[in-house]
Length: 164
Image (cartoon, rainbow, N blue to C red; front, side):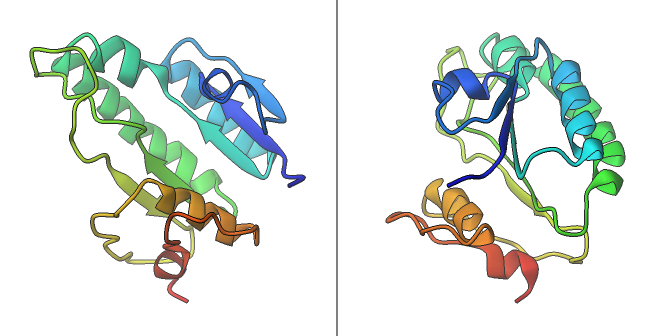
């Protein structure tokens, strides 16, 4: 589609580097957050797709709820840096690729709903997006935002986010 897609964390590996213009490997959440902020401040790429590796590998799969909570607080503080750096046309989508309850006896993926938080610098106070029927709604929203062909599955929530 000709879009400049920058992958941070293990995103490049997850997608076998298909559709990725640039891949930046990171070794920790902090490393990933630094890369994200650097890319946003430099206004590089049209799509920035990041995975903060510690949430999954270091805390979720190792059943460490205290570590997970500390990482969430660190990420929350990071948002204080990231949000003001976003351009007026940016759309920030925060989600997870799977549930991983760190207090279950198993270290496998679990069946919790994943969060879906969406931010646009000029829209407030926001609107609840509800429980989505499918993760494909994120793909449909990105497709609509870039005027791409809509996927056969998924419903865009762009109008809800942009208050159109």
